[in-house]
Amino acid sequence: MRVLNFGSLNIDYVYRVDNFLKPGETKAAQSLTVFAGGKGLNQSLALARAGVDVAHAGKVGAEGAFLVEKLRAAGVDTSRIGISGQANGHAIIQVDDSGRNCILLFGGANKDMDNDFIARSLAGFGAGDVLLLQNEISSIGAIITAAKNQGMTIAMNPAPFDGEIAKYPLDMIDIFILNEIEASDLVDESDPEKAAAVLGNRFPEAKIVVTLGAEGSLCVESGATFRQKAYKVKAVDTTAAGDTFTGYFLAGLIEGMDVGRALDLGAKAAAICVTRMGAADSVPLRSEVR
Image 1 (cartoon, helix red, strand yellow):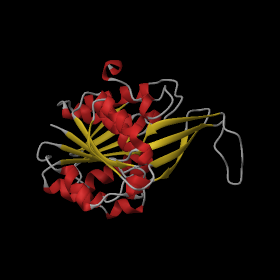
Image 2 (image 1 turned 90 degrees about the vertical axis):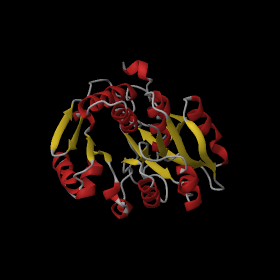
Image 3 (image 1 turned 90 degrees about the horizontal axis):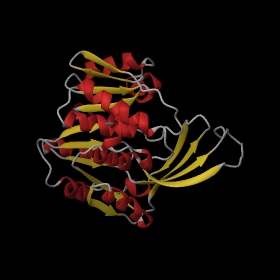
């Protein structure tokens, strides 16, 4: 079983601040660090470091060659990454003293997906393979439809959440992985556990996974609810926690773990991730999670 992660490739500019900027405020950052990032790249790294056979599809700008090399060095198949005439996607990230973050995204090359590129990227994948998607690239609906027509299992992390998500053919999704805010926004239900139950009723054939930050995570599947605690650590940067969880949770399922064990694997990997600065560089190796 192989995974094709059709996702974003970003350059992350991380500014350390004591508190997030307020409207009209100007302040000096404590530091600036540049990292490889993007939810797509982070999740491909997490899958590869968890031991999964993963290929990445997406586009970079002229300045994004180091992102491709980052994936290649981790063992990701990068043959489906194209070069766009647009600027590379990037993110401006503030990280405060408590480890929280806020992120401003510029899509750039991540929004340069067309039907020919989609067809070339999906070529060779079919039944038994997994497509993983986030919401940082263009043409999501077309990618979902094409992959389902090829018999692929589709996992989606609908982040960042926006109004376009409701227009996607969500009934084709087999595994939803959302945080509590995304789950609540998707069904207009403020309580994340109730939101998960609503999603489970709406998509009864799918697994619904909701991450709850310090409260852990849960999964609704076939009417049953599985809960997982969060491992207590000192967090310094939560930027890639969800991406790390996603990669390791899917790795567990691909290896044949039941939902409970896969949730636990994701929780352990995410706990290590948040103790480190940066996005891609904070994703742990499988040996560390063991």
